[in-house]
Length: 549
Image (tube, rainbow, N blue to C red; front, side):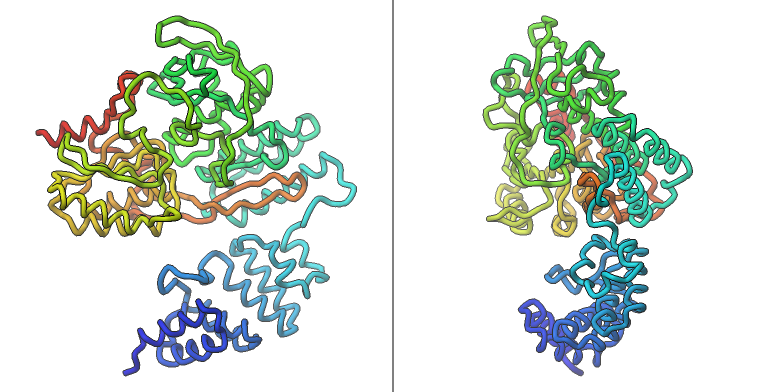
């Protein structure tokens, strides 16, 4: 029998090296031996197309479509596994062969299936640009010549409605109430300034049950990204200033009572219809973030000016006072999906910012670091703070996992604590090896700290640990559900240039009959204002109490 594993490895190596002629020969040999694996046909299609064998590529991609495709391993180039990708590759083959009508029909099928970024067809399929159906399939490249401001927004709303229909994994959310809301916003456009139209789009996205959905206006209206130089966190019903730039350092630890005379609860209620979410716990993290941006507060009638507010606070001394706080420029940061929202606490704070006067506990010590760990003699445990499901430039999560469990062995630790409470996500693939390590240590007590900030790929990691391992969860409920809609695939509204993200994937990481709205902890230890101001960590206190039993 042929060495099929070796044949695939050799073909994959040729693909990665860009030697497509060799790759085509090797993948042809692979499919002759194993014709039932769709990824092999997809790789053959890629190689053949790259060498100009468009008819051969068409045959290979059609076979891949019949079988379905999944990667051999995590490697480049990423195969066509996302919605509409195989149909799009078939359209490219047909266009190269001069079969225009068939190519347009295949492009239409790709768009129907939810193809990401149909606009790439302008370069990939430029030979179809004069086809009467082409513009309607790929969407407008920009606003129509001479279009008025109102017409631009209305065309954007039509485009948005179409993109949502193509993308959302749960079309039931696009019900008659949703379409009525779009129609109402369309009618209101002449009476709204641009900012309030954007707020209207946020309200539409709020209806999707998609915590990854967002609108970013930073390219168009930078003033909407200006944020107060103070950070807030909600502890139960109390909103505290948890951190502040030095000029407002006296506010650190203060309880916020009102914003421009409006009670905090009223302000958060006004913001709530804008806060996209996966579950009711997501807004606990999002609301205090939004409260930092006066432009949004003004848009919902909770602030008098778009660039400053007056905070009524109760200082640590007990004194109630007003503080005029002006919004400053956003902190420089690479664009991520989080940039569509104000920056949160405790991450993304300036290094010289002021906190209340306590010794910084471990859970707040290094939250910008995607992952780090230490041995803690108190409790005889290894504490692993896992803040981002991503590799560093000079380190990998896989290597860190190895070191974490080596530290457990070196110290003969009695437990491992995995702290996911600040982890907003990343790459789900990178979280799975942690599960394997935990499974390899069935007698090691493992505690997983979660909270409102446990989201996206971190939610998937938590769900895998919950489903497959003996780990005990501690803290407060996660910011997402075990099964959830989520993905970062932004697109731009052509008339206004506003960037929008709507998820196109449904992550079923748990069982299909798991209808929980979050992973609830077995040991409930939510953050409290009292513990925060005392420099204590209720979650770690609960872990140590459990170990001492």
